[in-house]
Length: 459
Image (cartoon, rainbow, N blue to C red):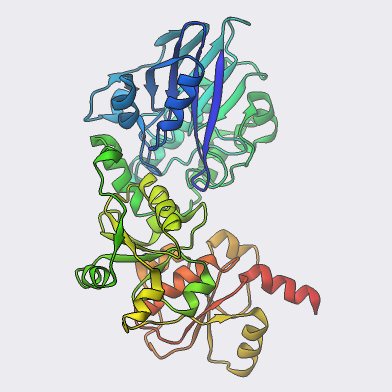
C-alpha cells in the first residue's frame, strides 16, 4: 500500500494520498486548495486518483476537493450533513471501499462538526486488520477537535457527540493502530496540538488526558471552558466550501500594479496588505496599510484582521514575495487579490506620495520609557493563555483578534502607545491597525516578551 502525508506549513493542515500502485488506483483525504502535488505524486507512482474524501466541512481553509475532482475526474465523498452544493456522493458509517490492497471503512464520528467522519484503513497485503485511522479533526496528536465551531446553540450536543465518538466509536480499535489527523501544530481547530505528525491510539489513550478515561462531566467542563476566538473568516470559508470554491485557474492573475493604480484602488477601498518584515514596514509604509509579515502563519493572521470579500493589493519587496503571499492567502479564501505594487514602497516614495512610519522600540527603550513616563500605555496583544502565563505588570491587554473586533478602549488618539506581543510579529499587525485608526503615537516592541524576559534574566 502506498501512503503519503502532506502538510501545509503555518495552517497546520495534513492531507493524505493513499493507494495501490499494483492496482493503479488511489484516493486523497482532505486535500488543500493547491492540488498539483497530489496529481504529480500519483502519476509518479503509477496511480490514478478515483476518490476524494473530505472528513468534514472545513472552516480554517479552502478545500481542494472540487479543484482536484475537476483535474482528476475523481468523485468527491462527504457526509450528507455537509449539504454540499457541488457534484458529490455521500458516505455513512459502515460504507466500505477497496483500492487494490488498501481497504477503507467509514466511521461517523461527529463532535468537531456534526458532519465528521473517520476513515479506518487496512493494508491487506500485510493484514486484514485496520492499520491506521484518518481521524480528521476528531483526534489530534496530543489534543482533540474543538466542538464550538458549529455554534453556541449546538455546543452541548457537540460535546456529547465528541465524547461518544472518542470513547465509543474508537473503542473497537487496538492500541497499536496509528492515528493520522487532519491538523497539527499551528491550527486553530484545537488548543494544544503536537507538532508530531502521527501517533497511536494506545499512546493517546495513555498520555492524552482527554482520552485517558476522563468522566463525561469533567470532559464537558474542559470542552466548554473556552477556546481561541474563532477568526471571522471561518464563517466565510465554511460557506465557500459548502457551495464550491472557485477554480484557481479562474482567479485574477497576480500582476504588477503601478503606483497610480494602487493609489486609485486604495481610494476605492482596497485593503493594502504589506508583507514586508516588521522593521522594513516600521521604517516607512503607505498610510492605512496592514502589516502581515510573510511567515508560514500569514494567511491565518490576515483572516483575523480583514474579510476575504475585500479587494487586496499586496505590498512587498519582491515579486516572488508577492506571489508567495497570494498563494498563502488563497488557501484561506482571499480570492480578490488584485495584484502587487510594482517597485514597492520605493516607487511610492519616488512618486512623492505620503508615507507613514511605525517606530520600532527595543525592550531596553521600553523599560526606560515606562520608568520616565508613567502615563505611557503598553498594550499586550497576545492571547489570553499567553497573558496568563506571564506578563508585564500594570499594562493593558487585548488580543489582536479582539482589537479588530472591538477596537481599543483609549479615547485620546494623542496617547503614546507601545504594543508588545511574543516576538514582534503581532505587535506590528496591531500597530498598523492602530495607526490606521488614527493613533499616531504608536510604537511596536522589537522582540516582544521573548526579548523582555531575556532582558530581565540579564539584570
